[in-house]
Length: 220
Image 1 (tube, one colour):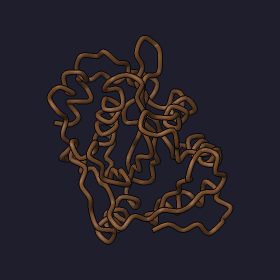
Image 2: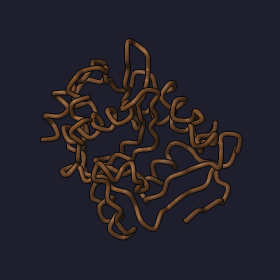
Image 3: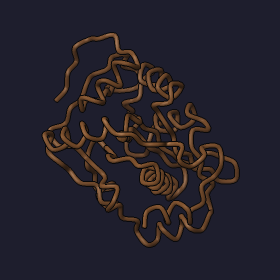
């Protein structure tokens, strides 16, 4: 369901929308308008049944990447908004950048960042509210970088006591990790319980690299 009713969206309104099961998108980077989305079926990643493919687990354990959190939000959202091979369009426009930047400054938006030889090569960002985390977008510039970010994200959510990991939609890519599609009424029930809960994103320090072994251990 899409609602294109114009509204002066503030970070506070954005958080209320997430708590109600709604999130914003734009048609493309040049479109100044934002519309609300409430899918009939929602992608949810069961935190207790996250599947790490064997080859990816070897990559995570190899420490070929440095993985940190909340170091460079602007670079992450720019990476997520950059044109991709399959499309030059992006739903991340200037208003969305500003809104999520404000949420980041307020402590309600977080990143997982993947570096290789000091260069950001992949990552993701999303919104944290209570014990719910809403994944927004991810990107990679080298193979497996976004997948490594996802493994570290789920490990941090598990360690921090999160109850819900929202992926918005189910895709073939996310399905390999165990993402499921649930009806709206089921999602709303899980959402209400998670938003009322408490979790700690900073259960691991954000300013130091988290090892692959530490991340994989949190998923056992």
